Length: 508
Image 1 (cartoon, helix red, strand yellow):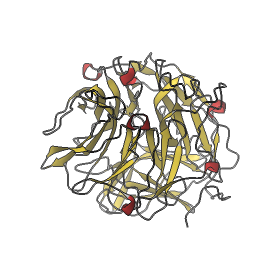
Image 2 (cartoon, one colour):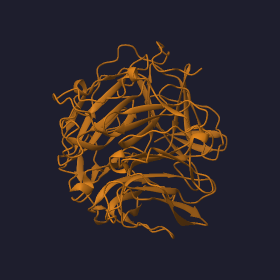
Image 3 (cartoon, helix red, strand yellow):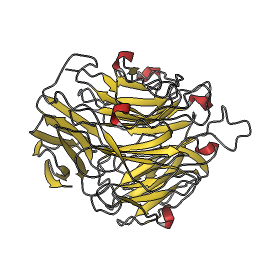
Image 4 (cartoon, helix red, strand yellow):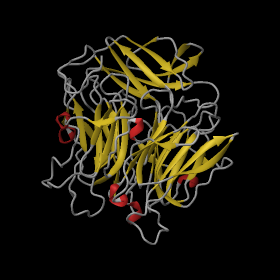
């Protein structure tokens, strides 16, 4: 049975009467994302454990300032310690992934200029990684996603390029082509995804769970102006754009970010799109790739500021799903802020925290939670920084210091965080699905790389479980193999290791 949004349904795993969300700011090293018009967008943060101590570290874009690594020393203490290879300028954002499957996290760094791949050494040191056939090019790159296609030793990499700075007729209607690197015989073959409509986010996902990850691209109407729209590339032997014959519906918006999560427990991911004007939650309605906006009454549009007195439309950037209060329902954090001085958009635009209610609707709690910053926010991340089972928050701001918040919500629910491990290539099992069974509810979560706004998180997948105390997990691996169900303990960080049809459960 599909659980529809807005239905007055409370599943047994929920926790009644959860406390209000609460975050406290913690000291952070001084870091500001700055720069001219080429850095109006971007400002992402990559979260990864770069030194294998179990604590998530941060790599933060700086724009015209050097990017920085903030080492997590525990207890919410962070120290700036940036190796020369990462102290780059012109950085829009970065995404962590293990490109060479050596068990050490690498980075794809997006820049105004040459994009770079960096190989990690497991001690927060990085060096240039130049697989044969890869070309960082000289573009204005604002979006990225990666996946592993069947039988390949390297991931497929997609780079989204914004306005073509070489076009003398620009910037309007001068969107650049996007770049796709597909492995072939152990090296990359580059091709262009045309037309490009100025993307600010892209995400490979098996949206309909049909066994293939396709590439969704969210585009900025501010520059494509007309003739463009959102896009979905079917990753066939020759990638093609989905159209009406595939069930794809035309959507046009000032696209900024993508987030994906199955929030209604039907096994299929909803998608959340940030925009200048409103934010859109969509569900897959079929047949094919038919995405439709959820009803306005769901409370997910977050289209105007709720503080500050500015009634003009909001500008959303990064979106992250996560269960803030561990009640078993995923919530949504949105970073917001004017592009620069856009007169038709709000200047004082507080960040948003939408808390999901047991009936599937969402309620604004950003002011209650203490995260309603009024500066121009950009990239962000929800991640358990202090390993206490609660999701903390990182926010990168344009021309203002970045912010780190500790989640101190008085939670009564349970949780579990789960990472995957398999032998050979794609060790972290990008493209796999984790399913957790808790009573009459099944949580479904895809391992993906991309989305957000100019940054992402590599690490265990966090699940709020509400009152559920007995749970089981299984994995649908990227090659389609399905593991047996295995009992797993709550309130632990775990790694599920592939062992034939079985799962070996270990502490993360």
